Length: 257
Ligand SMILES: NC(=O)c1ccc[n+]([C@@H]2O[C@H](COP(=O)([O-])OP(=O)(O)OC[C@H]3O[C@@H](n4cnc5c(N)ncnc54)[C@H](OP(=O)(O)O)[C@@H]3O)[C@@H](O)[C@H]2O)c1
Image 1 (tube, protein in one colour):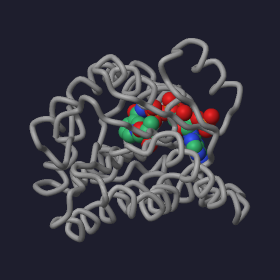
Image 2: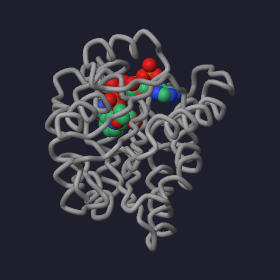
Image 3: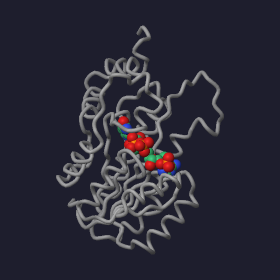
């Protein structure tokens, strides 16, 4: 699918992968709308990148999704690409106390949020001659990293949901694409994992975006750049070995393994 002259909505596009993708798509002549929760981040993005459109919207709130849909359809009726990218990743120790409301936060954003966005925008996208839904999962969809247990579970579920969505939409004009990034140099990656990831390298966001757009244009539906591809293959041929590596990976480097 050619990624030019499109109208693209990216959830969580105020930093990291989403913002890099947004700017790259604008450079190619696409109209791009990004969302996020934090109004100050949206205002800064709008000032720094005036060709991007910003709308405040939280994917965990059904009313926000409904309002976003109304606004997008009235202002950008040619919307043909939805990118479910919004996300957080927490370093969670399950033996510590967590409220029942808080413990599922990654599921609410990464899985429930993406499913609700698809359901809201599907009737519109089905009317377009050619459209795409891009769900941003993770290499951790294939092998969990125990230090981030709810995140890994949500990404595995998003992978499964995306497979089913692709099968159900196979006879339609909508391409269902999964982008499973490897570690990428963003706030999400370093934020809560500074100690665990000290000295470990991550892919630059612009490299990820370049590979992703090339893969979409080449017709690939499950895009696994770099280490994400290794995780998927290893999960098939050496699942116990690779899981042990993920257990170690989450541990601070100065802690004996
Ligand atoms: N970086 C990596 O190593 C890596 C690897 C694999 C997969 N991924 C995935 O890539 C995606 C982007 O991550 P990133 O690394 O670019 O992270 P990031 O720089 O922290 O960006 C996350 C974006 O999501 C937004 N967001 C968070 N919660 C939201 C909500 N409830 N509703 C709407 N927007 C929300 C944030 O803005 P607000 O906070 O203002 O809402 C921000 O714009 C995520 O799905 C992540 O899981 C990242």
